[in-house]
Each structure stands twice: as structure tokens, then as C-alpha cells.
Length: 201
Image (cartoon, rainbow, N blue to C red; front, side, top):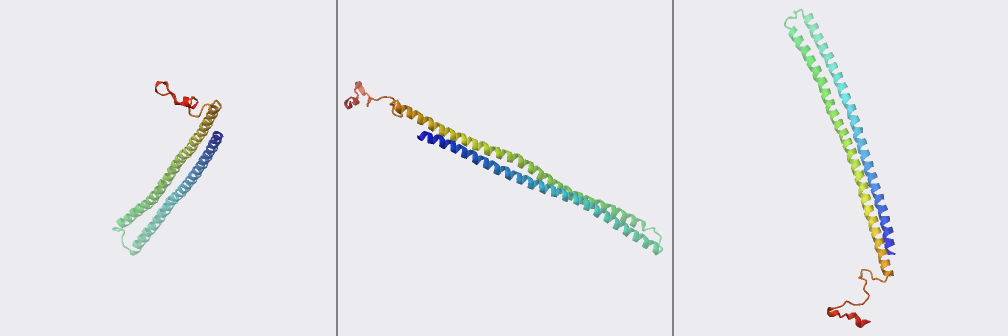
């Protein structure tokens, strides 16, 4: 009877181990998906912000050029009204134009650099999401494998208990004491063939 109890107990324990493994694997999968979604969502926002940085840099660069050209126009108008020749002022106007070109370039480049930094962060998050996906699958598989290993051990333990119980019952039916050597003499022969069990017959 105890062997049957052990057998069914092992089966029940194996089922419990499998169920626990499935729950653990599901928890890992849920956590993995949530982490990946969060990383990809943030990466998308960073891509958008990077595009905005480039657009804003271009807008600021064009604004700087318009402002600079307006300043040059005002300067040239003032020189014309003064009655002075433009000689000596030409270099000033030319330098102002070069300054405008340089400012426009730097402003655009500043936007591009900020965008590149954001793109890099977004790419790092995508790489992190991919790593999370791979490790998540590994953790999920490990949980299932561990549960299956424990389940097999529980089933084996129950089966061993059942087999031992059957062997004991068979031995008892045959009149052989459990764990004995099959002798029913009641004693063991000593030196010279003397058997103390003879006095008990």
C-alpha cells in the first residue's frame, strides 16, 4: 500500500513541478516582452527627437543667415547714405558674410551632433531589446527544463517506491523475510557445525 502511495505521490509531485515550471516560464516571458516593448518605445521616441533636432538645427541655421544678411544690408545702406566710398568697408562686409556662413554651418552641425547622440541611444536600446529577447528565451527554456528534470526525478522516486513495495510483497508471499537471506533455521552454524538454533526446534 505504501508503494502505491509513493507512486501516486511521485506522479502528483511531478505534475506540480511541471505546473510550477510553466508558471515560472510564463513570468519570464511576460517580463521579457514588457522590457522589450519599453526599450523599443523609448528608442522610437529618441528617433523622433533626433529628427526634430536636425529640423530645428536647419531652421535655426536659416534664421541666422536671414538675420546676418539683413545686418549686412543695413550696413551697406548706412555706408551708401554716408557718402563715403565703400573702399575700406568691403573687407568688413566680406568678413560678415564669412561669419554668417560659419555660423550657419556650426548651427546645422550642432543639430546633427545632438541627433547622432540620440540615434546612438536609440540603437543601444534596440540592442538591449534584442539581448533581452535572447536571454529571455534562454531563461524560459531553463525554467521548463528545470521543472521537467525535477518532475522526472519525482516520477522515478515514486516508481522506485512502488517496485520496492511489490518486491517486498512478493518476498512476504514466498515466506522470505524482507532483506533476509532465505534461511528459516533460526540460527547460524558456528565453529564445528554447532547450530544454536537446534535447541529452539
